[in-house]
Amino acid sequence: MISIKSTAFINGGHVPDQYGCNGANVNPPLNFYDLPAGTKSLALIVFDPDSPSGHFTHWLLIDIDPSVHTIEENSTPYGAARGMNDFGEEAYGGPCPSFGTHHYHFTLYALDQKLHLPSGTKKTKLDEAMKDHILGQAEFVGTYIKK
Image (cartoon, rainbow, N blue to C red; front, side, top):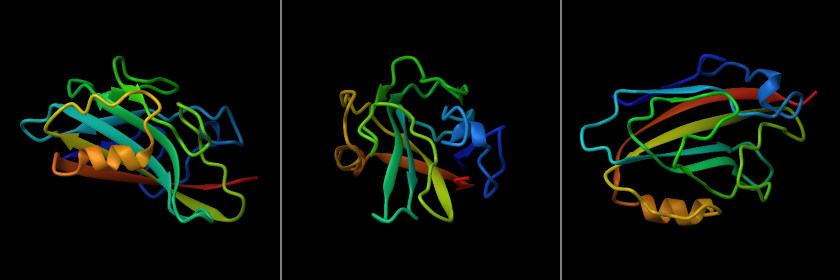
């Protein structure tokens, strides 16, 4: 079964400050395991369901090569398209809640085809393109409090 993990924090644990607005605001390292047979590409969506809007997108990566099993800290896999986050940037935008503790969902999708979406694609377009092409998905959650 597909899984996603980080060496920086445990599932359900606190996202270290360096990966949010209290620190360097760079993406944490991520590792992917047990991709389904037939996986042709991966997509990664990082979002906060606790935001006042109900869903805030922090990072979108599209068409990650399935031979990639690690995303290093502060990096984008070669060849992956970077979607548009809700900060209006084609980049990782770390946790920075306006109040309280928020949950940050790192969701990895294994897809049966490349999506060929351009950089700057928004989450709604990515969701639409992935429909009927998801072979499996995994989620990893971290919490964050703005200081």
